[in-house]
Length: 139
Image (cartoon, rainbow, N blue to C red; front, side, top):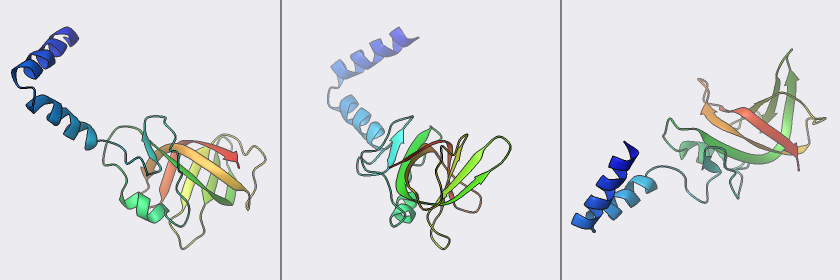
């Protein structure tokens, strides 16, 4: 099937070299992700993570896709909670859009530490940002 698809792409490009390349560029540009954003496709890490002061803006501009999107954010850890199996790290103060990192270890991180989160981006039913799974490290 892949061979047939590749042959079709080559044939269309040769038949109409102006049509297909522009179509492919538009389709790719509509996907993910603004290079200035804290979002990346798959497991990629953004060059510039979000912060608590700009996360609300970035959350509104999040890619609209069912594919996995990773988001990165850097800031002060506001809360550390543990259950029998998981750790829930919270960044940004109440009253702001909060970001929750679902991970497995605290690695000694405590509220007030400056940390970097990176993980699978989701919006919760309450509108908060959830990164699951998530990696967290002290900065």
